[in-house]
Amino acid sequence: MGYIQEARENHVKKKVEEALRSKMKQKALKECDYYTSKYAECTTGRTLSVVWQCRKQAKELNDCLHHYTNDAVLEEMKREYALNQEGNGPANP
Image (cartoon, rainbow, N blue to C red; front, side):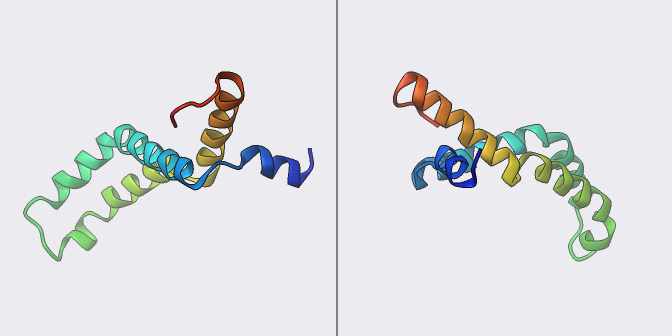
C-alpha cells in the first residue's frame, strides 16, 4: 500500500482526532490507575523531596501512560474510526 493511500485512509477531521486523543488519554488514566495511586501515595506530605523520593513511581506511571498514549495507539484508533465510518455511516469517536 502506498504512502499517499495509507495517509488518506488514516485521515480524520481535526475535531474527531481531538476526541480520539481525549478518549485515548481517558483510557490511559483508567488503565494506569494503580501507578497513579502509588505515585499519589508517595507524594503525600512531601514538597520538594518528591523529585528524588518518588522518582521510581513517577517513571512507572510515565511508562504506563506512554504505553497507552503513543502515535501507534492513536493511528489504530483512527483506523478503527474510519472503518466504522465506512460500514455504519456517521459514528461517534
